Structures are given as C-alpha cells and as structure tokens.
Length: 143
Image (cartoon, rainbow, N blue to C red):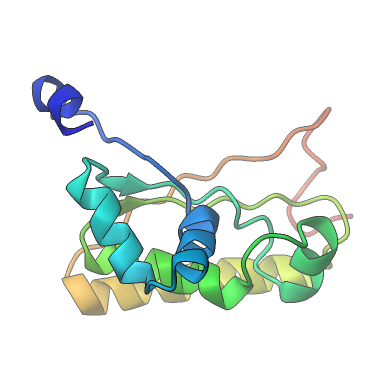
C-alpha cells in the first residue's frame, strides 16, 4: 500500500473502519492504538466512521449486535484523532432509535470534536450524510 500511495500522496487512504479496528484489537489482544499504528505503517491515513449507526448501545445491540459498543467506537475514533488521522462519522437514523438517542449521538460526536481540539489543537472535519433507503425520513427530530 505504501508503494501505491507515494505517487498519490494527496489522496487519503482508508484501510478499515472504527468497528473493524475495535474487533481486530480484541481478537489480536492489542490496544486500539496498536492496531491503528500497524495500519498507519502500511499506508492508512484516514479512518472513516461508518459503523456508528446510532451511538446508543440499546440500538446497536438490536440493529448491529456484532459491532462494537458505543464506547469502543468513540475510543477508536479518539485514538485515531490523537494520531492525526482524518476521521468521519455517520448517523443512520429513521429505524428504531428515539429522538433522545439521535440527540445523544450528535452530542457524543460534538464531545469528540471538543476533545480532539483539546488533544491536538485542530478541529476534525465531519461530513453529514443521510441514510436514504427510499427517502430521507424527514426532519431529524420527527418520526
């Protein structure tokens, strides 16, 4: 990957996601940071946030029971930002989550951004993408 990346250094490469980094760390008995360091050494310089779904363990256990916990997802992303990796986050809504859980998701992301500023001095960039199985399910706080 490093050889491929050299001529295309302006492009960001993402080799995994936060949920997979969490799983790999537990499987290999390595910390999140150790897993990320291995990936960075192989050329990764960004960590996309798909897998966040809704950052509520109640929802996650129902819609994606095999994925990491809310806290693990947040911890992996926090470690990635400390390593100056470009990160992102998703929010898949319009299924079983409550309005309160939607707001908690956004608050947790905001807290992550504030922590990143304290840790690194720069603000991570997040992009908002709506999940659209057929249509956007309306306003964020409407059901």
